[in-house]
Length: 184
Image (cartoon, helix red, strand yellow):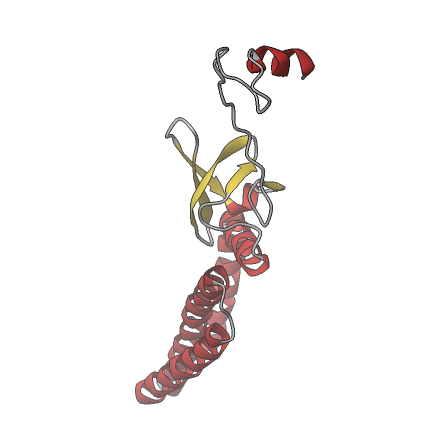
């Protein structure tokens, strides 16, 4: 049984790797490749857990252990753990959706929950921002209700340029800076 589970896990890993390579080769965007890699790792972990759980239950059944009480206890424990880990599951599911939809990218300037900063890292659990004062802010993905992305596909710069009063405009007339301030 252990051999079959190991074989199934190896075949599953190979299948997931091929799917990941095929999905990555179709995408030229590095952010999309990162999203595919994250989905690959998540699927691989989930698949291995399922394979080894089924193998363990089957092995116990072959050894003569009554698995009905074990499954009932596991179900009750699963429900209790589900209530206890509800926010954790919410964080992971929300993080998966954020990565899948591509709402955020590393180095984007975003506003999340009243915090403005540069995205340094995105995981399934949280988003790490660095604000303009250098502080690091961790925002759990489950707490993200809306995202204001200030640099996705379009951004605007505001540049404050000082012009000395002695500078002349293109016609050679002086006091250009005073006229700009008066006109504008």
